[in-house]
Length: 404
Ligand code: KG4
Ligand code: ZN
Image 1: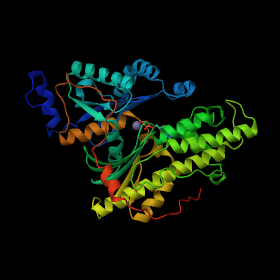
Image 2 (image 1 turned 45 degrees about the vertical axis):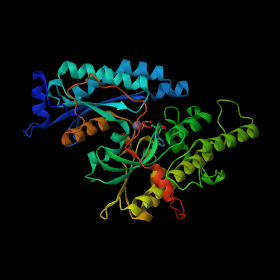
Image 3 (image 1 turned 120 degrees about the vertical axis):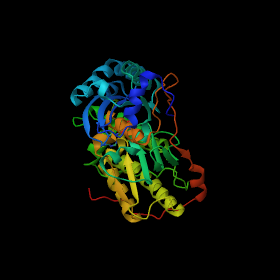
Image 4 (image 1 turned 180 degrees about the horizontal axis):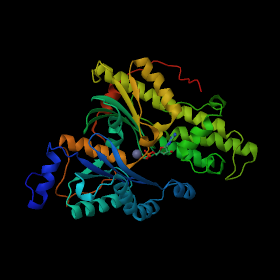
């Protein structure tokens, strides 16, 4: 909440935050919620003046998953350099910034802590206001930096840590329609990729699990394996991927036995398994999204003019998943929008943009930071998942086929 009784030293920034003077407002955004250390400086039109990103992906690929202590150490080692690089590239001095926005929730506690500690020292040293950011809110709003999309719109957010469907009614006003009951879509793809030892595939050595699956699936036959759809009987918008992963692991175990493949070696049918897994994840996402669209329409939640589905988060960079979702939006008359890949995965730009959105509306700008803390678990918006479940909307069957 914005505090209005400011100590003298903070009055100058308050003038700048809310002034209508010609000086453009500038926000430094800092992201460390998971395994990317990101920073960016944006002006209020969404122009990126400077950015820097350090990905820990390769280290985590080597260790077979994110080890929180390792992620923390890497954030600690890189955060100063990344922030300084973003500032240098933007040619902006800290004194010229209007505010600093940093992810404080949700995410890995040890990772969030590094970004928050750094940011609090920075804002105290430079006497800047601080804007705490919800990582999923940032994913949901990124698209508005690139397209003038008005609220309300539907969002599907799919990343390594989250899978959720929500109605965005305002920059900080969301209705949660569905979320994963076990693991996130990206986590499932990462685990399948690891189980298939895709790191040892010549085309996939440096790719994230989801990217590796997408790359190999292009040359695979998705019909070579059939996995049953998760939670087919539940008429809600929640996701579940753990059962699907068990089925896929079972198929891998069977094939490994048949082919006499040992740990770390690649199965001959690895591309087919990638294609079938990707299709199963895509169609589960699509069916739940279809129901969310029908639910929102039945409640009159979406505008008559240009109703839109926004898809973001790391998994949204997947072209196949986008194409499958397009079948759903085409059949329901929605417009589908996804930020470009580099803005779907974690970065500092999306955090700075969320800061700009909050700055413009004067929401959540703090001058007093002593009580700010990080929150590893933080739901997005008002949870109406049980209302969605009660509505028990039946979704008509659609042929989920793409040309590729
Ligand atoms: O949003 P993000 O960068 O970090 C989190 O907030 O989790 O998402 C990372 C996730 C990883 O699970 C990664 O495998 C997945 O996004 N991902 C993809 C693709 N690129 C990244 N999944 C499917 N297809 C892709 N092309
Ligand atoms: Zn993310």
